[in-house]
Image 1 (cartoon, helix red, strand yellow):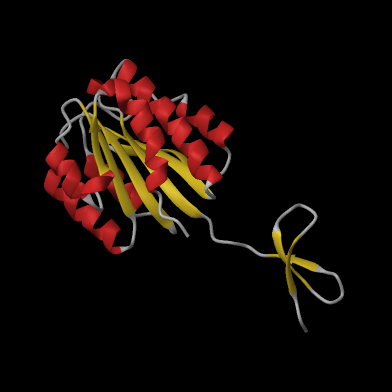
Image 2 (spheres, one colour):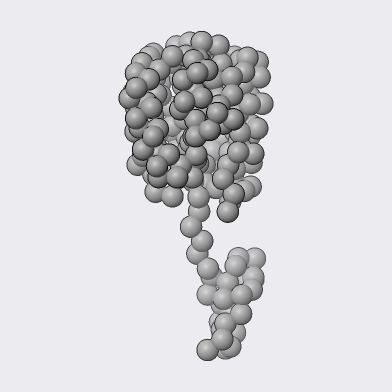
Length: 197
């Protein structure tokens, strides 16, 4: 029996059978994880720039058919929201993020461990203003993510180690070092580096 590729009444991609019955095609949705430093040094305007940039980024990523997730790291890491396709809901979740939520240090490796738990993860965007507690551990976990085909995009500001971020990123052009006043625009612009297709 021949089937025709079409859009159903809800505008979703479907296969239409000869009898007129539509079967919606379920596409795997790619996921992106925003991993934001909430250590003590991110207090004040820096965290606000990061949160606003994350909202802009999520809106753009969702527009590119990604589901956006958010995690924070400091002494440990924690999920703020699982992958979602609703930018308004994402904005509500990130509004609750604050400095000290998971301690005051900078354990980036803990955040990357969270990233390894996702299926269909296409990219991780790391935002930090400081030195990682253990660069070697973070690089080992990042290497495992890269071997799985996950793009790692790094945005650093203030005391972030730009050389380390270049090693951590999938490619050196996916590592940016900006002033904290430009943090929002750097995070917003990271969506252009999301893998296509």
